[in-house]
Image (spheres, rainbow, N blue to C red):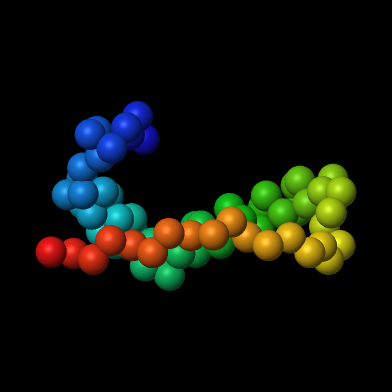
Length: 66
């Protein structure tokens, strides 16, 4: 994980994403990991299934590419 924006490498990230997609095109591994986490830790989640009203933080619009 980059420590700051100067360490960020778009090409490296793109290569990693392509490799991940090649190995798991349907995201089966990611889905299995998510389900396993929900089963393992979801029962201890104090707000699981409880609706709450909280506005998400405002997002800044992305800068247009030049």
